[in-house]
Image 1 (cartoon, one colour):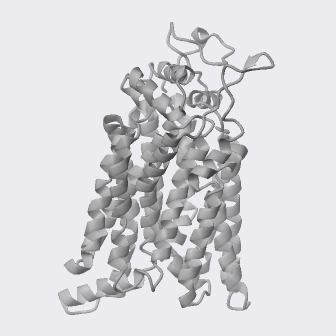
Image 2 (cartoon, helix red, strand yellow):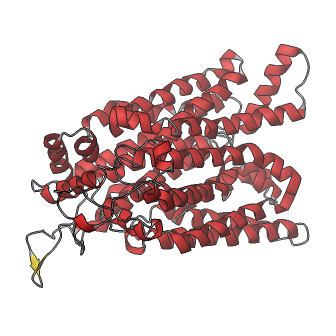
Image 3 (tube, rainbow, N blue to C red):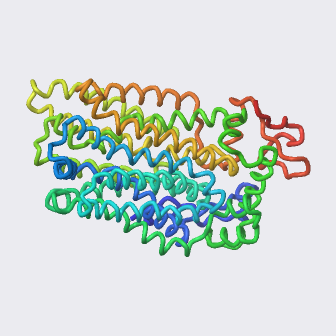
Amino acid sequence: IVLLLLMKVTTASNTTMAEYKKEGKPVERRGRLTVVLGLATFISTFGSSFQYGYNVAVINSPSPFMQQFYNTTYMERYNSPMEEDFLTLLWSLSVSMFPLGGFFGSIMVAPLVNKLGRKGTLLFNNIFAIVPAVMMGVSEIAKSYEIIIVARFIVGICAGLASNVVPMYLSELAPKNLRGAICIVTELLITSGILLAQTLGIRHILGNGTGWTLLLGLTGIPAVIELLLLPFFPESPRYMLIQKGDEKRARKILQRLRGWEDVDEELLEMRLEEQSEKAEGRLTVLNLLSQRSLRWQLISIIVINMGQQLSGVNAIFYYANSIYANAGVRQNDIQYVTVGTGAVNVCMVMAVSIVESSGRKLLLVCGFAVNCVACVLFTVALNLQDSVAWMPYVSIACVVVYIMGHAIGPGPLPFLVTSEMFRQTARPAALMIAGGVHWLSNFIVGLAFPYLEKGLGNYSFLIFAFICLVTLVYIWIVVPETKNKTFLEISQMFDKRNKVEIKLDAGDLPLKESKENPWDVAKVTSF
């Protein structure tokens, strides 16, 4: 389904060739979805991004049985029942250790991708999925809830690395006209992981007292598949050319990915990007924070990634049963409502073609606007459910609409936009910062929401509504559209706001479509 949808995006343009003429001008050759590109996309997202989604939702359905296991284990050790506050703390840690691990995974991104490459990092990352899968699978036999908490932290490292490296890897494999659609597959596999975890978590499947350890341990299977298959697919050509200096291998990789021999134009664009970065060199996080030429890109990715996580989406996935119970859904029906919302999430993300037709900015603004309105209406519905008999159905509808809004923009696009806003040498450090913000915000939501729900009750989602509103206003005012732009062109779009202009080193080729002499442009400096 993924491959067919992506092929549909490019059906109309695949026959366009650079040597054909139209109105006296060369027509640019459009990239197409080849078998190598499609399979590399699917295997990398299934083995890595899928882990993120699966482990976000897997802990929700079996939570009563896991908490019972915590209490029973504590009783066997200390001959007294566990206090309710201590159980709440342990459960909050079990949930929030995953995003905390994600935070530490995200800060490992830059050194690993620069040392091992994009594909090499994804292969190495499978260690952080297979080991915790075994740990969680034997936790009941070992009679240790500590093993679960530690394993959740380790699998969080896997998700933190994957959520940063997969968009980087795919954005560097894909041609610019397919970059949005290809990177949306990341979110599609995340939502598919969520849906599978919710489905397997139904009581009569694995979400019961005997099946929950197997449910947690299944996360290792996609990692094993990726470990076996991904070595047969190429490394990022940009990494090979710009960071390793191996033009011959980069050319062969591009020819394999594009399905044609003439890749000189794309290699030229990569060399121009490399030349524009010579004055900056490879940027560390500290260097990136001091770069005036990247100031507004950095602010933008922080705001967008904070907005994505503090909008409340993971509160819904982590604590879906509690939220639906408070909304008046009958206990036996909650698991099916949860699966239904997961299916809606997948269906919305499958509309991959709108990313290239509508653009990133519009989808982000519309998505955050829908989230904001849905949170406000959900708050109203929660306050009226005791006086209006049909109000629980309105509450469910609000959650479904919220999921739909998140799926069209705030869910899939932040990491794609982060990858697009930065050039090759700055991209690892930028994704490291974006990932750190993403996972730290996720950790805060996972740890704080139970207490927030107890303290604010029905009004807890108003905080999420306010954050969505602030984020969409910022995106509308500051963030440019990046659709169908090269990485270098996107950097130039920020120059005016950053009050700098990109300059190539003397003797290099001028930038494509530039109206200025590049030797006359002021050199980028740090502030």
